[in-house]
Length: 580
DNA sequence: GCCGTTTTCGGCCCGACTGTTTTCAGTCG
Image (cartoon, rainbow, N blue to C red; front, side):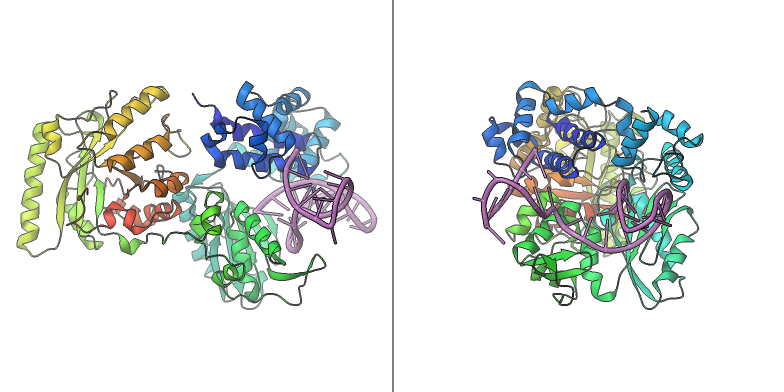
């Protein structure tokens, strides 16, 4: 069993505890960086079996190498253990409160001798905190507000929820009397699968304050955190924080890069700028003179693309501005990402034959309306009794209806075809859900896990690998069966799964249902290396869910670095199931 | 704690906003 997934969290925890104990910020920062690095390295870290080998990693010096080596051989981090010994357990949670950083957290803890969130709440309410020097009524109130707010909301939300909020706010902003241009930035623009804060960037013709005022007065705003001429932050009733920044027009490209992130990508760009004798900040790119930005002579760039060019880097689509893609950017090997217009048809949808809300004919009609030339219908298989899974007899009956509909499409001159598919449960023993004879009658089979998800890693791995090797298996559906913010996926070594799938010529789905959004984009780099094919699927249970593939599926496939050539349903219906 | 020399110390991104203080530290992104 691998214990590496927990290592980044432990390193992060060490960084937080260092801050609380009053350590130098840069020292704590080194542990942050190590956490990010270890996350990126994954299992590859194991192959570094000496301190010397660990030290070859960027950002890992003598001390961190020793800690990591200790962890890999003995399973603990000495530094962390020492800190946990000296700091109370509850204190670390204080750092999650925005507005309360390590310095003031430590101060409250030491001055009042308290360390839990509950104790903090009481101290904020009874006035002990505001009486401390450096604090006052306002800051105590602010921290208390944040604490109360956090008790009733989650850290992050699904991308779909964030998009709904963003759309609403943008509509409201359009009522501003000053003309302006606004764009979504941050993790929303990078198409992360979950979102914490929502960031917006704007330029205003005239008085920017008018836009900030309008922003702070949006209908769903429940608290204004800050309200300035260039920066405002609010909380909305849906539990999210929204930030608006306004900049001058000539600052827009640099600001857009800056506020799009990721943090790691920005660090990378800035160090790139330094190498070229330049300095990059949120306002622009400047020559570096005597270690200072020469603000009087900005390097001209009217777009993000031009700015990347000045750094001798290819324009990087927002979806790929993540640490994992740094090597592609440096080596100038970014792929041409798949776009919505590349999609030719729809795979993975349910009908009234199992748990869908619409009939086969209605689903087909809806796909035609959206401009697709085929639909691979995949109702549930017999084990999924809770979802009305099809018995072999029903399968035959469904095939008849599909054939009739296809005949009808041909007769009426429609360039459209329904494919006979099934979403077959992968049984606990790794077998698919029908006899081979029945399975052979389908045009394609999606194999998915729906039950018995708590198997141990070894058994689960064998289960999925067996399914992948079944000759009828065309696509592996939502591979880990995770539900974002609800439950983790099953225990699977996805690296092995991806390699095997590529070998077996089985595609792994990118499931566009908002809580799923997997194959996880973090695995896209490996997928490209081994030549894996994907399929961008709506997992639609009703006609209005088909469009998920363009709303959420395409952004996620782009984020995973897929080009159209590696996407099954970017193929024409004639070439779709050619398995070379 | 890491890194890289103008090579064993000094820099590590830096600007906006807030609140408390009275000129700035803390926090955030």
